[in-house]
Length: 302
Image (cartoon, rainbow, N blue to C red; front, side, top):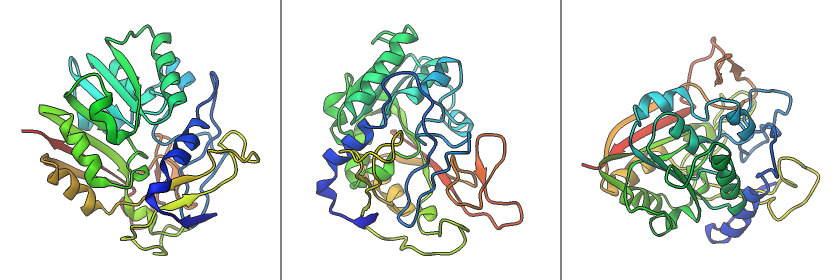
């Protein structure tokens, strides 16, 4: 069941909801995508749907050598060799540690979930990475400036699925911008807000308000691994943020927008009509006019 709810009642239930998604050990997660106000995009039979769209591969797959980043992210961020990187909303740290594999000198991951951060620390230790290369902090993203070990980073990164969990874009952008070192940049990859207004089956009909400011509250029973269990983590708030609001918040925080790219692919079967191309992405059928399914943004501090 989904219903509008006030932003100020979301923090503890949302933290508990993400705590339930952290497994006790090596796992292959139940496959699902993020909830939608009008339906449930779960597709447990499809092996290509990521369990958490913020992390393209599970920790065990990452240990075996799979990459935790998407190809367009790597291309747009560019060479990270010798640079410092802060990953906001890192969850279990797969994406964060992937940047180390690609040459980052030091990475810091921040997430609101204590169990997720502990899992990220364990994963780093398994890979032989000490705190000088990879460290993880449990804190609300809005408190990042006080929680992370350094005051500035060459790159502040946030992957898909993170922004929709934050009610206050301006506060998020100001926090992120504060943490970008001079000459550094903020990079954001996210699901396109136009997907929030379309119907779940065809992805062709407008059925929701693009400019809605009310959160959607998913009160599905139980965590991903046990849908029949009712837990403290069964309430999940999500906000849809119009693209203009995102760009305006970033620019208003003092960063210079270098690009805004819209992509015709997404990471899970957001609509029933989407097909998997064998490259890790879902697309609309080739006989359909395309709409943007994701976007990415880069903004620099002069």
